[in-house]
Length: 120
Picture 1: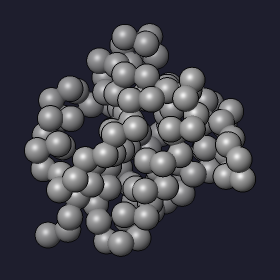
Picture 2: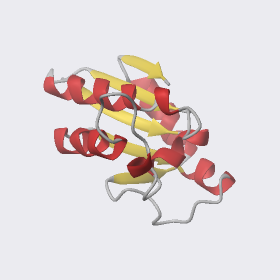
Picture 3: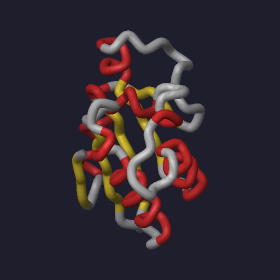
Picture 4: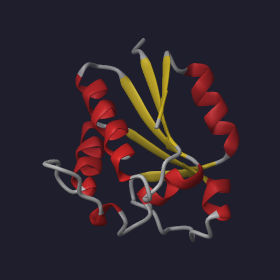
């Protein structure tokens, strides 16, 4: 059975320096044969709102959307917390297509199943 790493992104668009790492690390994990999931909660759900990742570019890295697309192509699973989307007033269907919207219990299940958890 493959190892599993859970990346929990709580940071939002106001801290762009924290947004690249979970996608880069998750893509690397997939290349290593490790199952990787990025779970977006609190302000982290802003990152997968359609049109927002295109606005973020830091240093010599590509635009954040390109990094997210690479993660998706590598097979990284993306999940957004439904309750967080409601708190921030983000409508259903307003997310990157590859991102599922799930309930709070899902984060608990993912954490219990993970071999490692990293938060950003």
